[in-house]
Length: 115
Length: 113
Image (tube, rainbow over all chains, first blue to last red; front, side):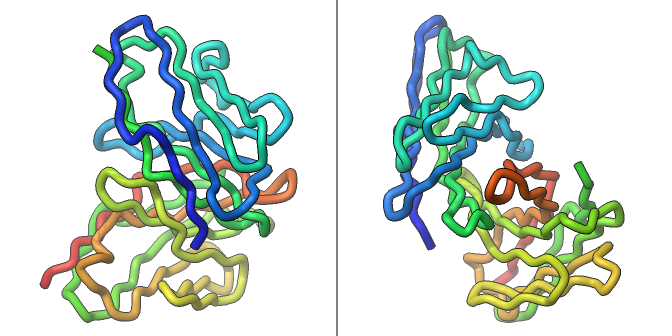
């Protein structure tokens, strides 16, 4: 299957700082990427849909000014958690939709811990 | 969003077939049935998807009921590496492909050696 690389795999930061997470599709072009969040022992929750060259679409309850998404190329989407607080600590996972439109390939996730 | 219902957990023996059920009685005519699985501390992995007909790929088979209100994921010969949480998801398509996925609680599959 196709490969999606997510970086970093884990990050620890101080409260009030910003953290950027990168999601790259390595062997295919992805017009559409998605960002999910998963709290311990819970299921994944969709945060936003990222389309190349346009503004992201955020799910209800997700603050767009806090979770900045940029999808400037067909192989890269970034999620920036601004002014992070301990309650933002979570497992953030991206996915890239393949060119058939049917399948999402997921990154390995980024574990964010905010102190 | 249409909802799916799966057993919380299932247990099977290595090298035996595994049948993972999923109920989706409120499925609409255009919803696709997708299955993904997630190993601990990893991102989900695509398994299989279908609309109306049964589907086979190298990982699994998907059997879809004639009324589409239920489906079964079949792992033909389970290995220890198949131990994961399996998610049955109804996928809505728009804008050129499947929308973002709504994950339920899934089925935790335990494989005994």
